[in-house]
Structures are given as C-alpha cells and as structure tokens.
Picture 1: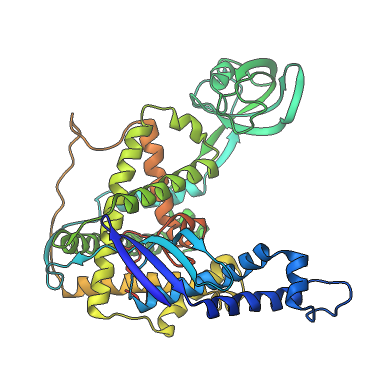
Picture 2: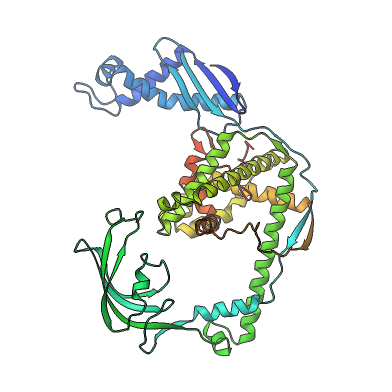
Length: 493
C-alpha cells in the first residue's frame, strides 16, 4: 500500500492511499462470499452461489460498497499508525476510485493534534487564595438542617398576598376546551412574580380562601407544548387555603430528630463536613492554579475548528440543561444575554482545549500509563450509578477508553501539584461596583447555574452523546476537555 501525506493549514493532513489491485480484488471477493451467506438465491444453497450470480442478484456497485465499508477503516487505521499520526477527528473521504482489476485509490483528510511546546511544568510556584470557614458557616448549616424539617400548615383565613403559599384546584381551558393535563387538585403554589404563567399569581393575590374565581393568562410563545404556545388561557380556580412554612428551632430535639444523640454531636458533624468542603475547595484551587501556571508557560497554536467544536459542545450542554429544567431555550436565544453567553462559551472552549492539549503533552513527556487496578474504582462508580452489571461496563471499549482518559487526567494533575510549590494567601474581598464581574442578569444566571450542573454531571456527560461532537480517533469519538479534563489516551498520548 502506498501512502502520501500533504499538510495544509495549522493541523490539516490530506492522505492519499493506493492499494494494490490484487488486494482490492480479494476484499471484493470476500464481500461476495459473506453476502452470499446472508441471502437466498433460487437454485443454490446459501453461501454456494458463484460470484457472477451474486453480482447479477445484488449488483457490482452494492458489493463494492460492502467491501469498502470493511476495507476503508482498516486501511486508514493502518496508515495512521504506520505514519505515527495523532489524529483527533474522523477522516473525511474526499475521493474513492474502486475499479476491479485496478488499484484502489482513496483520498482522505483529517485533523491532527497541534504540536505543544512545554515550558516549565515541574516545580512551578503558585500563590493560591485560601478558602476559610466563614464565621457564620455553622449557623447557616444548622439553619439548613432546621429548614429540611420544616412543615406547611394552614393559617387563619385572610386576604392572600404575594409571597404566600396557597393550596388550590384549577381547570385550564383554551378556546373553551379543557387542555390535556389542564386540571390540578391540591396544588401548592408560592405566589411569586413570573411563577407559573406570567400574571397568574398577581391575579390570585387579593383573593380570600374558600372562594372560586377565574384567572386569565397567556402561555409564552416558546412554551414547551407547541399546541399551547402563545395562546390565551382561562383558569377556573378554587382557592382552598393559605399555607405557612414552620421551621423548627435549633435545639436538642431537632438533633435527635435527624439522628444524633444531642446538639453538640450534630454541631461536631457539621463542623467536620464544612471543614472537608473547605479542604476540597482549597485542593481544587491548588490544582487549578498549578495547571494554569503550566499552561501559561506552554506554547501551542490552536486551530479555530477545535475551539468551535468545543464551543458547540458547551452550547449543546447548556441547551440540554434548559430542556431538563423545563425552561424554553428558544426564548433565551432571543434574549439580549444570549450572544454574550455564547461569546463566553467560546473563551471557555478555547481554555479547555488549550489545557487539554498541554496536559496531554505532559502525559506523553512523562510516559504515563493506566493500569487496570486504577480503573476499578471508576468502573464501580458507574456500576452503582447506572445499576448495570459490572461486566457490561468492563467490556465496553468506549467506556474503558473514557475511564482511562479520566484516570490519566487525575494522575497528571496530581503529579503536577505534588511537584509544585504552593503558597496559600488571604483571599481578596470582593466589592460590587461598576466593573463587577458577577453575572446578575437573569439569562447569565441561568447559564452559570447550567455550568454548575454540567460540572456535577461531567462524568455522565463523558459517557453520553457529548462524545459525538468532540475530537476523535478513527471511528472513535474523543473530547477535548478542561482540567480536570481529558489529558490523553493510553499509548497515544
């Protein structure tokens, strides 16, 4: 097999393949034999029909396509390995010339991993703002425990006001017809501006318990039920009562109710838990600071396409968050905040890709690998989370590859932190002002909340459709992630 390589742009490689005519013909004949065993041809036992009969039955072009489906991935994989190319996208076939009796000629293009020039990565020195336990942390934790044991109880009838929680029944009609799922009994609703449907709660305010009345509201244009989107609705409401939340006092009785012998024991537990959270926060800040320092001293020219793919992945995750929480993403797309959020995702994607490339370079430089026993805790976590047999996880090559990447990332970050000099410094106080970088806008708050949700589900995302849009080896998807993002693949990185 002849292989030619041409490079264009920052990281695009065009590959030309030419397979000898004899080998191409053997692949065609193998496809014939395999197809003959799958079809019934009158006058012949299955698998015994001669080639010319199979060609008349199925057509030469069909058999060629079958042969190429098996042959092309094998040829590309072999050529990539022989040429020692670090491919990060699925090859795109530009041209394929397959004529029987002639060499098979194939042209493909793909992206390869950009070259990284590492700076100092061992023994970096960083100052890390230290997280400390706030003075009111224990009081807030105790209050949270008390709120978890709160209860709702009716209050004496009075005029309803905004902020109350009410118990009601309702029936919703659109164009005089009750909508599907438009009836509710015993609904508890906190009257807040914008809650339920726009203007609904405001019309309930001012009413008295044990009264019936009508409320008119409009479904938003981007409502998830398209049949109701933008339509006027009329609600027949039966207001039952006002409910008030009662929060128990923080005392010995509360401590015993949540499973502790006394209040002091509960406080000790909460202090320990808060202390562990502070430690985890400082560990995370240390990791981030060290990785950022290593990345800052490295050089790599990142192709725009890699950043755009990662940005698309982040926006897809954001859209999924909106859908999962019942929020109309289309409405957010039309908001003033959308473009600024999308731009911020581009910058985040750029940093994620950069970090992933640098960590991968460290993995290769240090010749890090993954042993089977290092993967065991990760497999066990997936088994417990998804309630599937351990064999199903252990034998899934794609999942194993993803776990290897996660283990490698953890190893390389821990290694860099271990070799670094870390100095904790006081955390600067934040002051709100004209240049405050906190996101107070409604849309940005949703995006930030989605970011938090994405991080908490990062492992699950790595096992799902997010792989489809990311960087790939031939026939395998591969994400370019942040730290702790994927650092690289065993053997290739």
